[in-house]
Length: 168
Image (cartoon, rainbow, N blue to C red; front, side):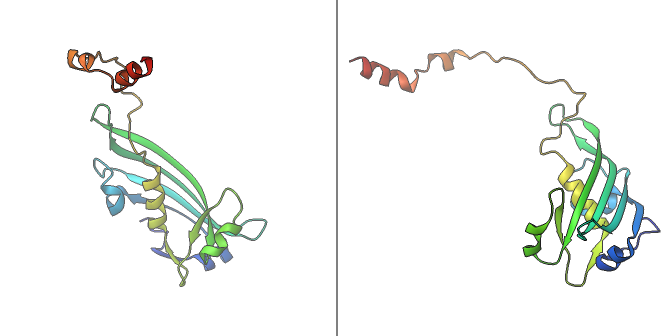
């Protein structure tokens, strides 16, 4: 983690002080993300800003930039997916407060002690940013019509029997 970002942050004190932090994290430090990546070369740049909006809702504005090495499911080759995440996390003390958040906020349930790890927030957002089926935008799409073989053509449709019964 970056030298100017503490490992643990007291969310409520940071909101009251309207603090912000910038930092870098190596991909190799993110254990949950590693299983989704080809390798862990590179790092992640992030900004975490604590504040309150006009309605006095405490939030964290999170901005993340990363280049994630993935495997293209079309070509099975390594490619780098550029990711930019901008997320506003509304801080809530209980799940009941989640419904009171304005649109545009994702709820973040803060532990009772109020302590958060910036690295965990960044890793959570990157895990969510990875597509279910990673595809390299430069790879060629496989668009081909497959002809039915003789065996498939020879099979009688299960509805053909019903059609003949209907005619009788």
